[in-house]
Image (tube, rainbow, N blue to C red):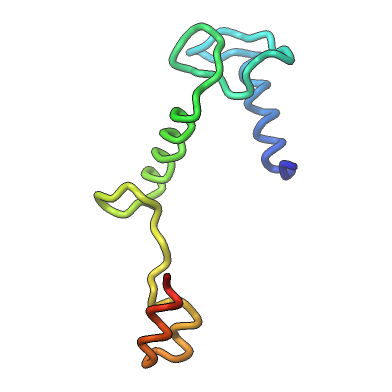
Length: 99
């Protein structure tokens, strides 16, 4: 179930599609309409999972959440892990907990 913020943004998005923008004409939303449409074409058609992945990837990149050159989301530094900070001299425990 979607939270109230997600519902609000989805309603705004569908309302924008109904009204149209300077890039796309108004659209009649029906039960058969795709939830998220491909904006690269004038025909109303849904986007594919690969396009969703690219959109999310570009948002990560724009927000600075990707490691440079790797293309994967950043993870917290290992030294900031609370269990490691409790006993930093125990290298065996530390190496097994991180995997």
